[in-house]
Length: 213
Image (cartoon, rainbow, N blue to C red; front, top):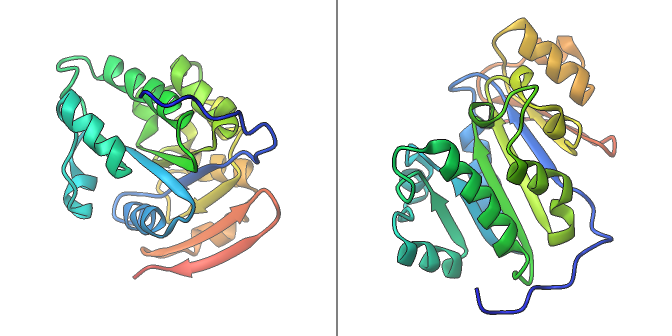
């Protein structure tokens, strides 16, 4: 990217959104609506290895360097592993590094969405480029959005930075307790959720209960 980097937004508020719930509960539908309705956004970068977001958004995925540049200019960039065949971990690390780099040149904020991030980190390990996005992203107006069925398998570098937690029905006691502890959501409230229903809690005390379908 040829333009000069923007000044660091040192006063910006951190924005780390965690969307969790079992398969089919509504996570992806919620995330897509969030991306479409978000305001003051220059770039949406989506880690889309299966091509699901490209299909549902009806947008072309980026499979070559030229397509990558076109996606950045369009403001919607959907990455898979095509540019790094056979090495998903290297592809993911490069995606996170590129998101950090591109965000530094954007006039408005960048949203980085990663589905099932537990596949690329563990409670004991997290890729350096991902940790930078989460912990330093606010300085470049980056909001990270994570979707997962297994919140108990996420690294503390992510869980400790969550500013908003959106909870759909969960499967598994460990995942449930991790969300209850991390997001301060009443356990009985989560247990009452049905598919399509969610409860959202922010670090500023706001609470919202909603239904997608």
